Image 1: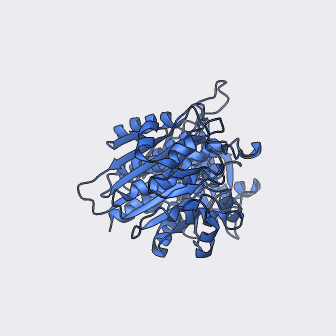
Image 2: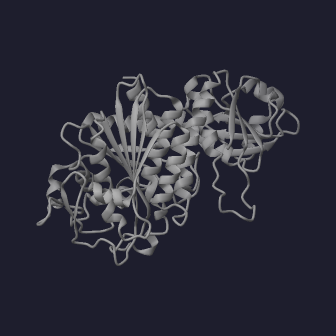
Image 3: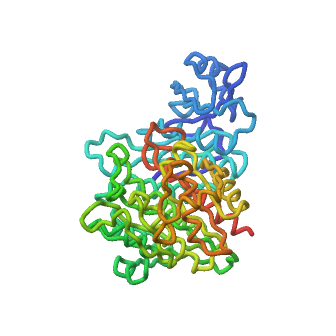
Length: 491
């Protein structure tokens, strides 16, 4: 695990293997955003000209590497662009730090000289660097993958507690990334539950696990139905964190389909190879509750991990089956690939029994989210406009893309069933992300504030790494949930 510390020394004198310096762009060329005078002096005023020579302009996210030939203590200078803003945003700093640190894989130590004059800036730099240093090498046997930077130094005069908080956030996100990247052969529902018990116990959480028999006896028809086609039966994990000074209680519910083949409504193969990520919602809930506990936030939090494996077999649920949900409502299953909402409906109904001030469910729920908002922006729906905006604000502050979406009343009719209380799918494709949210809303009791986050795209990066985001599991929405807890802790 990469470590981070703060150091207020002049960057040119810090003993490190690489010095990362943020540069602003401008008409006169790139200009160091930190320690400009000492860097200019160290390079005899030729640093800007050298960067121009390698076509570095300072635009946001741009990188250039220069040997220092002894001009400063570090043998390598990494210039990272911050754009032309006089005061870069925390997300700009996080992405710049992440991109620069990621480019230094194989380098033991690095120092980050980016704008870090405030606690918010210093934490952004530290967190971006830590997230950029992430690597998943569990299955590498040939040693070809270079090790990430092991030691980071953030040039800042802010208190060391800033780095500690960044470390907690990075540890939570990294756990989620690890879980999402783990192949389903090594992460089935019972194994996920076992991991939750282990890490939750270490963090002081109360952990309860319901097995398939207890789920059946307890009336969790959604979880039982989705999981009945697999030899790996479903689980429901309840995590609980309490604080003696808490005045609010939050409930987080995560979709945890450890692999989604679509069931009997089989997915095409091109849509199946990355379905190990379909447990990203449950991963985010686990990571967030652990982070909240480690930060000691004065708020009570319960987290539900709705875990199942959706596979076809002779025992799998069939299209046209009717299942009895935990809430008592009956559901006609028209499509077994619309399974995430079936496990969430049980989790939401159970979470409501804890009397929370807010329920937030998190799920890689619909391909329609990707069609509507792309791979990096989650859709947020809620039964209260203020709640929807609160979640979007928390996501934006964390640097996680989110956009508020409506729940149009006219779409509810498309979920009508001739034989059950509701169907799990509307027959038309149009507005299917919203229809999924409307389905879930049916299982939220009256008077309970609720939000739904569909992060089908943001949970898994199928493209090239960018900023502090690696290829594969991203750990998306983990920081948003922690931010929501912080906001309720301050109420």
